[in-house]
Image 1 (cartoon, rainbow, N blue to C red):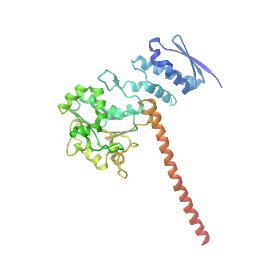
Image 2: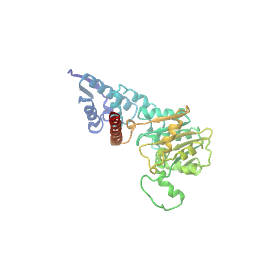
Image 3: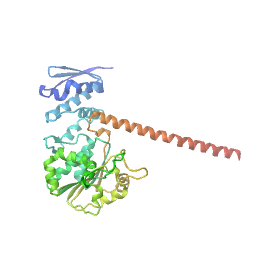
Image 4: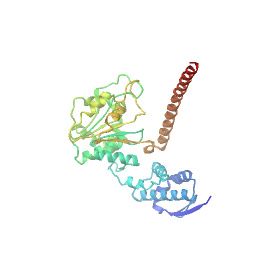
Length: 345
């Protein structure tokens, strides 16, 4: 087994960003690629198998370029660059970084962080209706919100409408106090949080009072026609087929719609079909409607969330396999009975 080494120069002003606190990113790269990394006077020596050393060098160069562009490197970006390196696609992380959507109220840039997220954003730009489907933490709602606010600021739409079905997440909340708005606010809090972070509370309140930004339960959409608006339906897996049809037929001229949902987190009553599942089957072949399927690789929350999503995916696949086994055995038993009958005859 041959061993090789390479030297990479990392400018001192980018060292902390690329290496991470207490060299945490260096340790991740060492462990993932099974290489040894030695730091000395602004240089790093990478030692290991030729293919692993090549991957490590490429990952460091991509992270360095991201740092030079003014990005604050995160553990998610390091892990994602490493996963892309095994597919020899690590350079794509720089293409993704070019896609600036807008800035938060604190000046933080909002960009897609994965290939899946970039395709999702591109579809929102090019299609009238887009379905963003994927697990928690993949940025489905947040990116859609950023695109809506950008369209609103650029006068491409006259108003923003954010809606989600008011359904309890597996627990009965009883009768909530206050007026109607107070009763529905807990269901819509995630949408308010994103709006406040991107737009700022004062700007949101001002536009909300003018009726330019509306956050409402899905039931409020019935009987309306929505023209020149950017409409986001969140938690769409909790709609019924009738609700989904009602919502999609509200769309008027000059409007853009994003429907987001996670099919693994349905809170509907047992036996009730999800409107999102039905819509995927019914609308899948219509050209003007886009479908973006995000996966655990697109999770941009804490790295532990990605591991949780993968663990649940593996568990659910195992359950599916276990359910198939009895059916197979039952089929074999039935075949044996038929065979024995034939032999008797």
